[in-house]
Length: 426
Image (cartoon, rainbow, N blue to C red):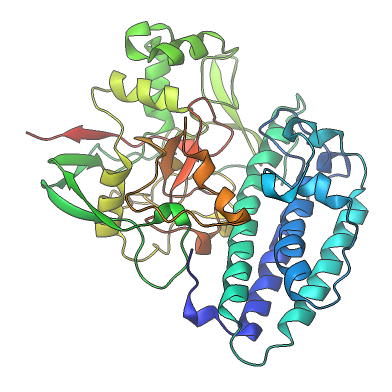
């Protein structure tokens, strides 16, 4: 994990710290008191747990180690807000976070204020650049909080979207664009290509080390699979066609109450889906989302193509987008949902939906697994998961890059996950 030198001054770090921390609280302002506590399934954490856990990260890894005479806000909170760090002691079961009626939300907000005040005091001790170790820890903490901002939005959506009243996070109607663009492809010639992060900017350890990969000739679809595309898959009874699915996938599909993406509901022969604006008619031109790897893989086979590897995806993204596009749909745009492309040149490789790849989540060559507690951050999850690329409409814009590797188990779909096709070329 590395830190950008341009962010090394204490003053700039403090400003960025305050902005990111305030954004987390702002994302929760539309919630009712009851919404802060709910945990409908084990994958979803209550919003107040996210607010507490991100605060514990700064207190546990920075303040208690680097601020002289720092007094913990309440040492019992380590048990509540330690997520999975074996080295940091015992912790609440992940599936029991919804039983956490106490500490109250008011206490957690007071905890955030206390830690923010002390973090500012720590940074004010430095007139110029921060020590390298402290700067790196602070950068990791900020990137970690941005990860939880995305989890906040996806968890809030699950909390509200599985409520039979379909309450809106914000009031409004989704724009229905009713425009579509023809299928087209980005061709890539065979050869050796560099993969992985390079440069002085921040990256997670799982993006290292940069290395060469050989790719045969292939093509990546220029647009994401749309709701209209996926509806055709459903209408062809593809959920019941075993030949399209992996063995685990067809068994998973047979257990679905509704054979459709998560949050889709059929009413009076028309399809609607829950968005953070409430229950809305489906925009057929928008990217399909809340899709499991099983569904993405079966759809690709039904369409006569395949999912890309993460290496193929990264090569195309680096070629197409050396910089983040200004029209990419991220959480700051407050659309809270994938939107239709604006033109046939809008490939939507970044933002909108996390794109499933056909690559298992494994270490790169010369993977530099960090020592200590932070070595638990990524490395120990490199088993039984698949890689996703590109970020989503819930991802902070400053958090994503072409080399970013997200990962989930094959059945997960509460995140904003979608599909892009690939094909081999002769």
